[in-house]
Picture (spheres, rainbow, N blue to C red):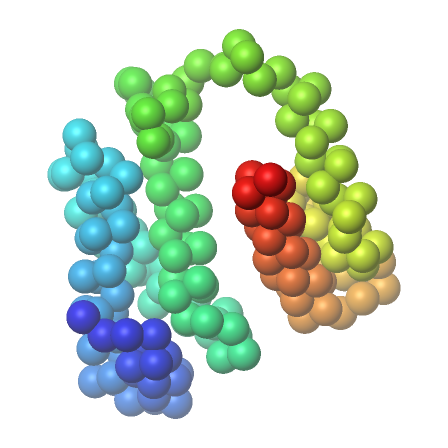
Length: 180
């Protein structure tokens, strides 16, 4: 299996028009995705392969959205994660679905929604204003990047970078809190 640098090189060659490199990238990505989905859908291996194929199509059709300034695997796994979430939401309406032992159909009676909102608000307050606003508009209010850019006067790239940096900071802050 290829490492980050090899995958990135294949992706960049593919973006430059090298069809063989793009095929090699998708082949390597498929191997990584199989492991990712099989680990999360242990009781549904047939669905894991369907998700691999769906994600490969998304990687192919969205390849122009990859920003070479960021790790390729983060972009790849973000797309995979969204595919998995969409799958679990669809499955939620059809049958029982589980993610890491948590039933996605049922509310957690111990953890109220108001607690979650309070926790998110507390964490967001620790971010710079630009990052906080970008995350709130795109991730919480579910506006498009374009809509967020128009309402703030920032560029779409600035919104995307602010979200990326803000989420990265939030992950670090949560890890620090868990460590204490």
